[in-house]
Image 1 (cartoon, one colour):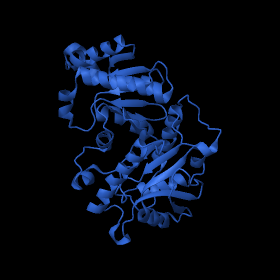
Image 2: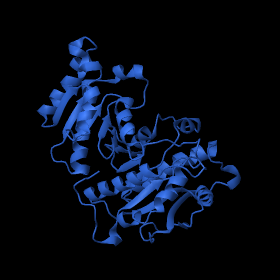
Image 3: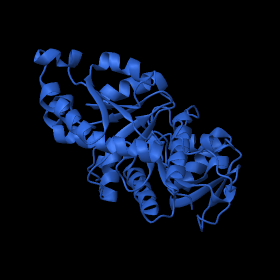
Image 4: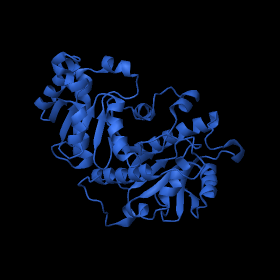
Amino acid sequence: MVLGCGDEIEDKMNLPLIGITMGDPVGIGPEIIIKALSKPDIYHMCRPLIIGDETALDIALDILDSHLKIRVTEDMGREKYQPGWINLYRVSQISPEGLSFGQPTGESSRYMVTYIKEGTRLALEGKISALVTCAINKEAMNLAGFGYSGHTELLAALTGAKQYAMMFVSPSLRVVLVTIHCALCEVVKRLTAHTILLKIKITHQALRDYFGIKDPKIAVAALNPHGGEGGLFGKEEERVITPAIQKAKKMGIHAIGPLPPDSLFHQAIKGIYDVVVCMYHDQGLIPIKLLHFFEAVNVTLGLPIIRTSVAHGTAYDIAGKGIANPSSLISAIRLATKMAICQGRMW
C-alpha cells in the first residue's frame, strides 16, 4: 500500500493521533485491538487511541494472557503513547456480568454505535488525525434503534456527507463500489450515469489526495457477462456505464471501460490499473477477499474525515476464544496513518 507521501516522520513526538473505535464490544474488536497494539512498530508510526469499553478490554487481556496495561486518557493530545500501554478514551464500562463475548445485548449494541459517534466527533473537531473502526453488526445496530444499512451510511449521516464511496484496499488491488448494501435485484434500479460518474470523480480525487497518484488509471467494470455483448446480455453498459465514462473523460479523468470483470481483475492485480470501479458489492469484494482476506482495508471516500476500517465482521462465533486475526486492523491503522501524513493531519 505505497502512497508516495513518505512513510517516516522525523519528529516522533508529532506522530498522527489515530482514533480506533472498538466496534461491537462483544465481538472480536477488543481482542484484535490488543493483538495489534502488542506490536511495538505500531507506536513508531502513530499514536493509537482506543475509543470503547474498559471492561471488554480487561476481559480480553485476561483471555489473551496479555501484559499490556490500560491507561484511561485525560488529555489525548498530551498523553504518552508507548509500547506496553493501551491508551483508552473510555466511553463505556459495562459490568462484567452484562458482557459476554459473542452475545450482543441492547446495551452493547447502543454503545457500539456510541463509539462511532464519539470517534467521528473527535475527528470532526480535529482532535484526532484519522478514524479507524473495528467491526459492527448491522442487525444489532438496527435492533438497538439505529436504522442504517451499515457503517458507511452511519458515518455519512454523522458527517453530513452527501457524496461518498466505499473503497477496499489490499496489497495488490483497490476497488470502489457504486452500489453498496442492497439486494442484487435492486442494483440495476440504482445504477444511473450520474451515480457512476459521481463514484468515478470521488475515486479520482481520493487517489490524488490520499495515495499520491497524479493521473489515476480508473478501470470501470461492466455489469453484465462479456460487457453485455452489444446489448445481447443486457443494456446497462450502453445505457448508463459508457455515458458516465465518456463524461469522466471529458473532465480529464483517465477512465477506461466498461471492461468485462471476468478478465479485468486479472489485469488490475498486475498494476495496469490503479483502481477498479465496481457496479455492486460482491463484484468488488470477492476478488479482494480471495486475494487478501486478512489484509484488506475498507476506506470511506468523500467524508470530511479520514476513515479506514477492518474488512471483516464481528465474528461472534470466535469472539472471546483468543484466535481472531488482527491483520486487517493492523493494515487499517497503517493506511490511516499514511493518509493522514499525505494530508498533513498530525496533531
